[in-house]
Image (tube, rainbow, N blue to C red):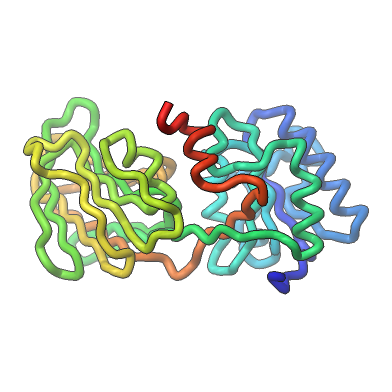
Length: 288
């Protein structure tokens, strides 16, 4: 048992998806008839609650459970609604892949009933905190579930990034960019760039160069307790720092990005009848 009472549920809906909106309306009424308060009630189509329009502070302060009706992008954006609290997240797949939103729509109410009965399994996913520094000044910070990426604009030449691990020099990467990925994100951009798949519960982070100039510059897996520092030491065009592929910041020469493990985990409710290798085989067509 998890000893968690669900009193307030936040509903996050994939934008411009009418079927997800209809389900959200039904779900809101279902919770309200059982005495559970809901946030982000989509009473009208114009009131659809997604991660960009929701009252984020209310989600962070009040929600015990967030139900996500969408795809992986909607799920990733939900990380910005969880704050520092241990909020449960249930993903219902209304996207194309559904790698993180593992439950099918027909499984939704059975899964919610198990949560309300305090009978469920939580998959605690590690997240990273990233800070963008310029001339000793903190410009921006954020938390990611998948990855932190520095990459060039389409017409820029190769960029150079100095990487340190706990203050120790690792390498100067000459490449189109660099990916720092969590185990969850290892099957996203990292995998496309030739990085390894990392089991979700591993205490590790992977650093993967994007199209490196020197082919001996291969991905490296490092402990998740280490602090990673990336410094842009040469660029001949536009360079962008992106957090989970959704938040972007322009980078200048000598800007520094500092990355460390977040103290907060992303707490996914897992289907009892599937495991990680089922997901790899069925969602990513692994080995086929």
